[in-house]
Image (cartoon, rainbow, N blue to C red; front, side):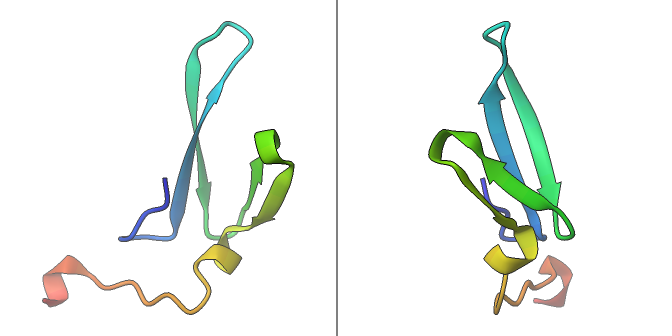
Length: 57
């Protein structure tokens, strides 16, 4: 899930015990999607995105 409010991506992964675990990746981290052999910096996903604060509206 890619947040629209902050630079944050959440990813659920099935662990060895068949339990879903939540992994969070913030702006200065790289996200890795094992199932499709993909990785990139989170800041690249949010490139040219302007986040707005709900209080500003």
